[in-house]
Length: 134
Image (cartoon, rainbow, N blue to C red):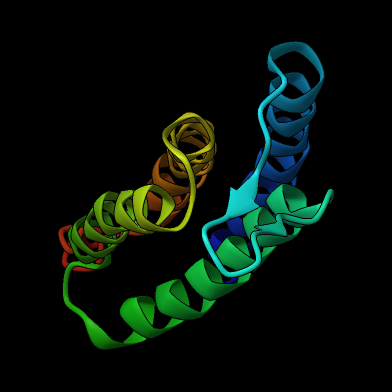
């Protein structure tokens, strides 16, 4: 399991730094207001992108642990579940925020997924590795 958790932690921390930088660029250079569509509108906190990236990594680690112990083909199961979750993660941004901030939030989701999903997939066996004698 250690070989699986290391990529989750590393990818989550890298994604946190990159997503925080994306947030600062969006706010500082493009004057994007990250506001939730609520009454009254509430601002998305300054360090939310970094915190959510780490949270997604922790949640991904729990899912990976379950997949690695319960399925015959952990790599393909991980890819199916994580890509479906990534696709579903695009919807709330468009519902909860304005279009401009939703696009930036979805870019952050893509960055996180592009880092975490393949790094973890490479650490998992594909079902054939367990059947191969050493």
